[in-house]
Image (cartoon, rainbow over all chains, first blue to last red; front, side, top):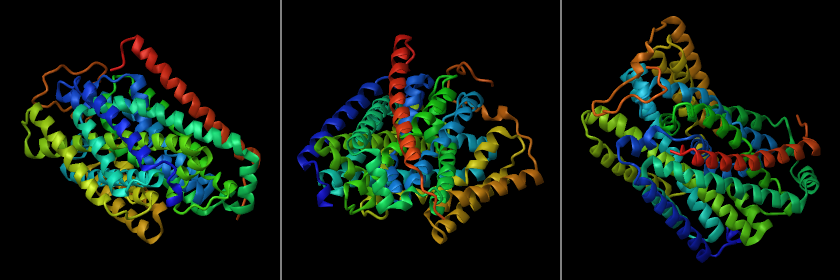
Length: 486
Length: 42
């Protein structure tokens, strides 16, 4: 890895300290707006289109997009990039769902609220296990990515870098709640877009499409193959992974609750369209490596290595900013949304139904701290490649696609089918992950869950009343927001 | 089986992704200015 240290550790620390101070100050600054629980957990339920679009896009641009997309391009070529890009379908399909969620549940807090009210407590327990496992898996994946990035570019020790990034995100999320998360997401989304486009355009303008293409043809023709079976399998798997992740995760549901009525559909639609090219732009960097005659010591570092090679220190700085922004925009969202899930679904619903807003806010902060510590402990040993790490959770999220989507639109979907679909889908999907490969977990999990949900609905159709979703908490005194149907 | 992407297809895919990414950035900035002027950021 020594040839990747384009920035000195001192430069790395300088950048890290500068951005950390800015994010933490903004967390404090925007946190002053959060005077109620709705303010802290859901940014006042009145987020506009600009911040709404940016937060949906930036959160979905994870470090996996900016680091694993080049890795996949380097391993699976063109279909690796396009397959990753299809992750945007989750955002696009969620657009109408976000509007419906906001309308059916004007006082909702979490995706867990929906599953509990729609399918009852057994399905809710299964869902909570899946969702919390997924949240932790994603957190760990990004904590690891943070450590890897710092070590690759600056030589800062993996454990030290990982710790700093986790702690910074924890601090500003604790200080500002969802206001801080969404506000910083906007700035981070602009940094990501500008940084990635500058580096990629610089690479292709300087090296040339013909040179890159001819080099691939000569040294790695498989990367240009449009019929690579593993890549095609990955493409469908990633499409389903994106759908499952976004449909079930409280990261996306909390934004649906936080957006002003009428904003959800447009924000998620634009976020999907803006996100789609990013894995291709990031992946295109990796395809330059053969033309540069580069020896890539670890495939999960190919993106930063190429950027540093073609632009020198400036490239390293750009890629550092892009990946740090990608990491922070997702880590903060995950910390906030997972702690919301634990506060609302576990603390309030199971242990303290009459907890005051102040107690819930305090619990939220402690849970953000606990999640950070847990993620940090698992991140300490660097256990697997980035793509494999996040793909491990594919079986879980794939199994939630049908119970969530059918439950939102189809009165007939029943409780047993939803519970079994999630449970068996996860188990069989995990078996496929270990027996077949990391790229089929979501595919198999969603297929099994779909069959169970459809067959059980046909055998024993339910008749759900949508009004049952409009839960009102005992300590909510404000009127129901405008734009709700119930 | 192999079917290699042509240079034209390869170039078109990457240039298109560059254009959409740059446009996304411009639209996000425009939306923020519009929301700010209308007092509808939060």
